[in-house]
Length: 99
Image 1 (cartoon, one colour):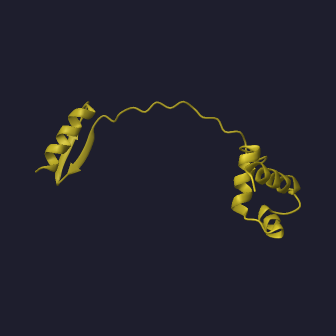
Image 2: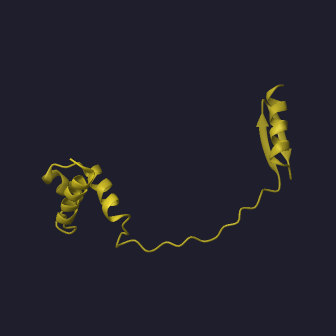
Image 3: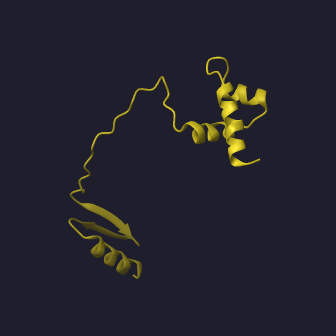
């Protein structure tokens, strides 16, 4: 079966589903098709769907501030630092690893 035939078959299955009449699980069981494939092809054919009961979520901008002081423990050595570059921290961790 070609991809277009497969998509057409699943489109017919999607179009036959009545949301209020039965659950997707019941519908798939009645048609003897895999529920996971139902959702896979629904996404492939119709794209992401919005749930009617969910409210639209909005993302707020967030700015992450580095902590005042960071403390880590490496090989039983306690390190506390502020304003350190990634390169400096990497060098320190390598030195601790070799102790």
